[in-house]
Every structure is written in C-alpha cells, then in structure tokens.
Length: 196
Image 1 (cartoon, rainbow, N blue to C red):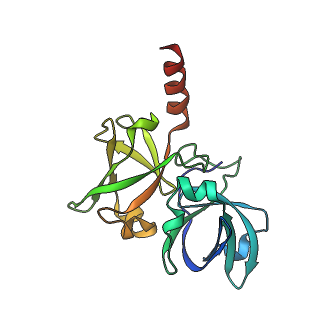
Image 2 (cartoon, helix red, strand yellow):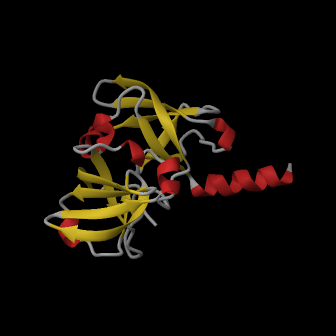
C-alpha cells in the first residue's frame, strides 16, 4: 500500500526485454536503502525489486502490467516517480493507493498559471472508472485532487513543489500517464452497477 506522496525521482538507466517481460533498471537516491523483494511504486505501478547494484535497482514488469500501464513507453534517461510502501505507523499524507494502475490517460491540456500549473487528462470512460470534484486521483503515482471532473476527463492543479519534485515536469500534451482511481469510489461504483 502507498500514499501517492513521491519520495524521489529515479532515472531509467537500462531496459531489457525478455520474452513478454521488461526488466527496468533505475538509478535513484533511495537505491542504497532498498532490499531485494521490496515493493516500490514506479509511476504508480507496484513492482518488486529483483536486483541491487551501484546505486541502482532493477524491477520486472510482466506483459499484463505493460498492457495496462505506460511502462512499456519508457526510454533510457526518462524520469520515474518512486515511492516505497507505506509504513503503518506513519501519517497518511496523500490517500490510500494500491499501486495497481486501472488504466492510462492522455494529457489533453497544460496551462501554466501564475505560480501553478493545470493539467487536463482524458481517459476511456467505457471502463466505468469515475472521478468526483475534490476527490482523489493518482496520476503517475502522485496523489492529486480532482478539479473539473467530467465523464471521461478531469483536471488537476499542481503546486511548484510537486512540479519540481515529480515527473509531471516532463508531461506534455499527448503524453500518456498512469491512473489509479480512488479505491472507495471504485467499490461504490461497483455496488451501484450491481444493483442496476
């Protein structure tokens, strides 16, 4: 379980394809503190550390993960948002995040405002995921608050700290991002659908 509060940015140093899998090697400030078999969220995707060396860690994304996320689009040199799993005795500063991406979205708009940024994302509404005004959404592993919620799109407002310390600084129009919708909202939507 995660909180959507990004610890640090990692840099992709190597990508190796093996059958349907992708081995991803990441250099980061937290690599020395990681352990083999530890769960780490990469752009919101929970992956298991399989190797450690020289300030880097390696994880494997299987075909199922590559089909449902944007990890298959990664290139050497890209920045990824990293978060280790939540400690049960710590404050939950973001919201409850599982590290299980529901679907991807495309950035359809980016506005630089006076001291902040507004991003708009569009997603496939046929999967029946929903956002609500002032509710939580996880974009590339970042816990954010929804503004301008619509049937297949939403916007988020980004403060300078978040912009500078996450890979949102690299997101442009037409960029693909990972979305994890609020777990409580997903249960409510499923209950409502089963009753109708």
